[in-house]
Image (cartoon, helix red, strand yellow):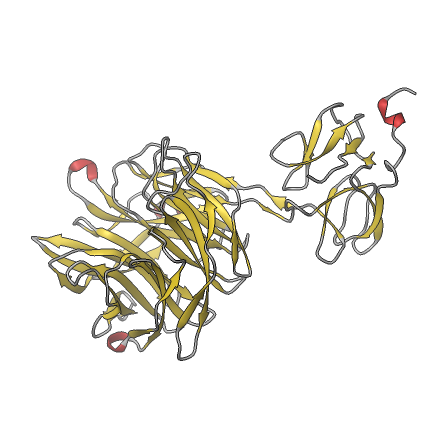
Length: 502
C-alpha cells in the first residue's frame, strides 16, 4: 500500500449510478440531477460588476435611466454645476461588454433645476420621453420633452423637441414616474399631487409631430387614487396590455389601468385597489414585469427590510390584481437593511428580478440581489456589492442588447454621478440538485456512470492532496469556498466525494 486511496474500494461502497445524460458531459465534470431524473453538466456564467464611468462630477437628486434600442441606454441627470445653478442633462450611454461609454457633451433638456425626473423609451417611434417639473417663482410646471438620439459612443447626441407643459400647480408633483404602453403607443405619467391632498394622478400622452419630436397630452388628468398617496410607481404588463400603478396609502396597494385613445383623446381607466400584505410600510417600491412567469413583481423597502411580492393581473372588464404573500429578500440585519430608494428591473437573460438598494448603515454601499420567481413565490438570490461607497440615489434598467443591467447614480467618488453595468450569476446549480461527478465522458442522451456521495472520482488533475474542493456555479471544481463542497483530494487525481448531503 502506497497511499490512503488504496484503503478505499473503487466506487466507495458501490455509490455509483448510471444516468442518462442531458447534454454532453466531460470526464470528471460535476453534474446536477434534472427534474426528469437525468444528469446534466453544471453550467453557468459568473456575475459581473463593471467599472464606473463618470457622467458628472457634481450632481444631486434622483437620476433617471431607460434602455433604448440595441446596446444603448439613456440617462437623465440633475447637474449641480459646482454650485453655479442646476440644469437637466441627458446622456446617451453606449454599452459594450461590461463597459459604458457616455456621450462627451451632454444634451441639456432644461436650463432650470429639474425635480422628480423620469424617463421612458417609446419603442414605437424610437424616441426618448423625458418628464420632470420646475419651480418658477412658486409656480410648478410639469413638463414632458421628446428626444431623438443619434450616433454612438462619445460622439452620440440627443436632439430635443420643444418642452410641453402638461399642467401647473402651486405645489410639488411628488414621486413622478412614467412608463410606455406599446399596445396603444402612449406614455403614462403618474404622480402624487401635494395641491390636492396627495391624491394620485395619471396623465396620458402620445409622441406626435412631423418628426415625432413633440408630445400631445390627453384632455385631462385621471384620479387614479382619491386618497393620499406616496412613493407612486407604475409598470406595463405586456401579457394583458395593462398599466399597473403601485403606491403607499395607509398600506401598500396596486391598481390596474387600461390605456385607450391617442393624442387629445388618450386616457386611462383604473380598477379597484388590491392590497399587498396587511401592514407594509413601503417607503419605496419598484414594480417590474416578469415575462417568464407573466407576473408583476414589486420590490419594496418595508421598515428597512427588502421585501418582494408577486401579483397576477386579471384583464377584461374587472381590471384587478391579485397579490401573493410577501417574501423577505434581505432582513434588516447585519447592516444590510434597505433604506429608501429601492429600485428594480427584470433581467430576461437570467430570468431574475434584480433589486438594488443602499444598506441602511455605514459604509452605505449599494447592493443588488437576484430574485427568482417560482410561480407566485419570490426567493432571494445572492447579495452583490455594485457600488462600494455611500450611494443612495440611483436608478437601474435592464438592456437586452448586452444582457446587462445599467446603473446610473452616485458612484464611488460621491457626489459624482456615474454609470456601470452588472449582471447576476446564471447557473443551473442549486442548493439541492448537485448529484456528483462523471467517472468518464458521456454523450448527450447516452447512459454513463456518475460517482455520487460516498464514492470517489479519479478523473481529476493537479489537485492539492488534503484540500477541500467545491463545485462552482460555472461548473469548475476549485478550492474556492464560495461554491458547494464536493469532497477532499486524496491524490492529485482523485476526490473522495463527501458522504453527506448537508
